[in-house]
Amino acid sequence: MSDSGPAYQARIPIYPRSVKGRYRAIKWGVLTLAYGVYFLLPWLRWERAGGAGQAVLFDIEGRRFYIFDLVIHPQDIFWLAAFLMIAAFLLFFVTAVAGRVFCGYFCFQTLWTDIYILIERLVQGERPARIRLDKAPWGAGKVVKKGLTHLLWLLVAFATGLTFTLYWADAPLLIRQFFTGEAPFPAYATTAFLTATTYVMAGLAREQVCTYMCPYARFQSAMFDQDTLIVSYDESRGEGSRGRARLRKGLKSREERQAQGVGDCIDCGYCVQVCPTGIDIRNGLQLQCVSCALCIDACNTIMDSLGWERGLVRYDSKRRLETGERTRVLRLKNIGYALVLTVAIGALIWNIATQADLDMAAYQIRQPLYVVLSDGRILNRYDIKINNKAERPARFRLEIDGLPDAELDLGATEVLTVPADHSLSVRAKVRVEPRGREGQLPFAFVLRDIDDGERPPVRQEVDFSLPVSGRRSGE
Image (cartoon, rainbow, N blue to C red):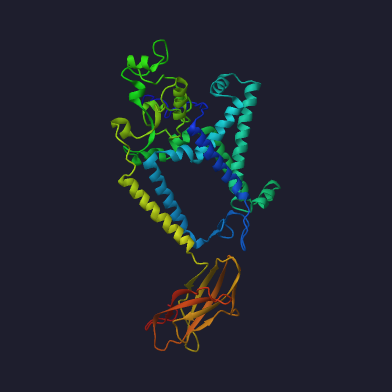
């Protein structure tokens, strides 16, 4: 068998050049906001009558998620499903309207890669200097610059990993334990894992994550249509009838270029040099494009320096570029996404706003299903869990409704005391005389707040199991 060559292409290094402009400013603004929220939020204190004093805390041990005044309990896990559904439809909606802007402005990979490139530029210099440094032989200067770059990358990666860990425990306490060697092993393991992955993804892999690892690059085209706003090159204006040409004698003004059929693109390559994935937007839409719009800033900078009209590279739809027709924003697909989003967001907000601060779950113990006592009565046992979500402790009384002459036995406990934002599990025994009845008898446990008569009681419907003729006791 003949050698068919390597199975994959070696990575071609990309040296993004800095650029100033509207979209670069937006990206810096989003990055500053995102980093501020991510790194500072674990340190924000929050006063609660019960529970943690941290504004955002994912307390696995206590089985609580604290997000400001919202406390999420295990039984509220469907909120997470609703949130993920909303996030998915929001991504579909935004992609259908404005293309891959999430990748260009809000994706974690983009945000951290931007910082890593900034560090590289500050230490090693602008694009030409970085290229020269990589081509230069190893020496003291190169070792210092490369070493300092990677050291700063590792520090950012470590800060990223440690900050993520702080969301899962009390931040001031955990930070002291971490640096004194007293933190739990998962804290060190999580920090180490995220340090390594951040360093590799943002520092070493970079654009390969977007091009080869992220599935979004592959299925985004399924959400695009003729009216989706994408980063576009105006080929008719840029190429003219004879293509693009550099500035030279006889081709320095628009009038001269138009007279000779040459387009406005001066083939400077600035749009390619600023691209974080190294593509040429003039070749059309490509899956590597993350819609960061830095090529728009680059092209506008050149157009401004020449005194020509901006917009040779711009956000536009394929429909407008090819036919000149107006972009249609109100499309059936977009309206459908908007309606689903509105309903889902409204339902989630309503559910959170109307959640009860008290709930109860009761489960019959089925091994054995029932017990026949010596006096002829039938005994059923139940596990009952009470969740007091209020920010105050409460005392409760458990009663039975719908099962006449039943006896409820809670052992030595008559009053159930549940601390604020805590749960209580109790074992309840219910005894009933058969009186010729058999099968399942429906009834309800009723939980009443002793100290707050205005607090609505909670009912939990269950069944009481009686022997059926022809069956053995306990079946």
